Image (cartoon, rainbow, N blue to C red; front, side, top):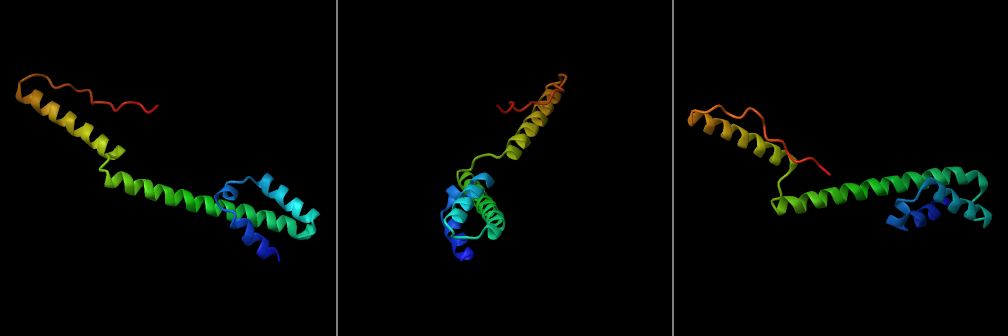
Length: 116
């Protein structure tokens, strides 16, 4: 019976995946009051609901990250690493040009814009 209830709760989807422990406890208290689970099963059930919710949330976050990464890669969007590498290359080229022109190269490296 408890496994059936757990399956139903997990199948509620993303909304339940992000539910807090307090919300899970409230749900379980209601089930205890209705006599659908015993008081002794309630703590285990809450822990199971929270664990399953965290697992579902982690899985969803991983899938979203993967999807976003694939989309950005398919659009040829530069990564932070690509950007930093480009700045370093520009700095090297500016130094080389300054050397070839016989002037003192600028020793300050180009800084990336700060993140807001």
